[in-house]
Image 1 (spheres, rainbow, N blue to C red):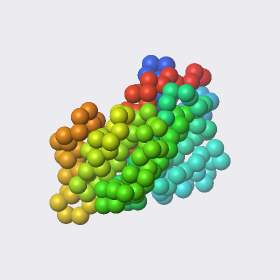
Image 2: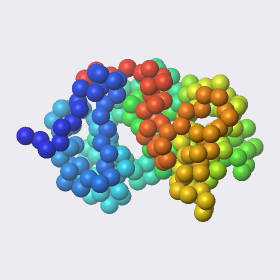
Image 3: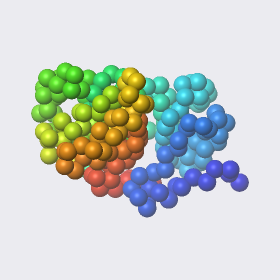
Length: 219
């Protein structure tokens, strides 16, 4: 009997598999959970894996890949590519890289075509304008920013696609661990801007997948 009850039916029910939240779990617990994925012969993705855990597990298993920036641990290959649409992940600064990488990793794992754009924040808005033609080609845009969290509001006034704002915990003092960016995005005057929780690149990726209406591959 397994101690961890994995929802393997989620793929058929919702169109995407269960993901494993690694933070707070021990190396042994993560390893035991991934053994269940192996038994089923399916790929799995663990999010929020601390570097030391990822290194230990990936070092012990050839079928695991650890991404220290995205903080993920992947078992097996990505899901087959879909034709559900494309997602652009646009981050204000390099400091937002872990959140952007997490979102991009989850989307690519699901087989969704994804392009990442970094350093497009309002402090150098000319860089955003240069990337605008490519951003307009995407079907959904995930927009990530810390400090005052202005980028999603600006971008929402420039493109017609659904925008998912992700506030990050990047910033000094009154940025308050991302609370200021979160409140700015929630109170934005940009119509239809959707916002997820602080640093939640994973949640933004799943929201984008739902917007695209993708249907997961069948085992």
